Picture 1 (cartoon, one colour):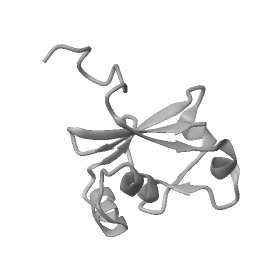
Picture 2: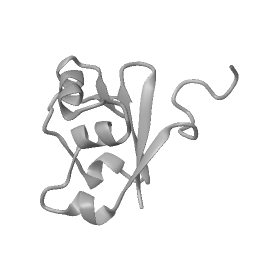
Picture 3: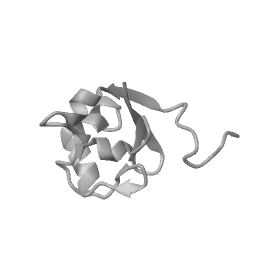
Length: 96
């Protein structure tokens, strides 16, 4: 099917935008909520099962805490991070 293959491009993936204020705020943004907003899970319960089963990833790192919060550190110097559900489904959280 062509393309760059692997994880090179995030162009065709679903996107959700969050503000830096949301990320920096006291409560932050729950990663589970991002899975639901991106359509990678149909409910928070399904997203929790995904984390518990080891199928949830933030970039290349496995998410092991179902209460994990998305922080500014997760973005590093980038404006976006990729969330993965299993091997084939992915979405992008982008700072606005």
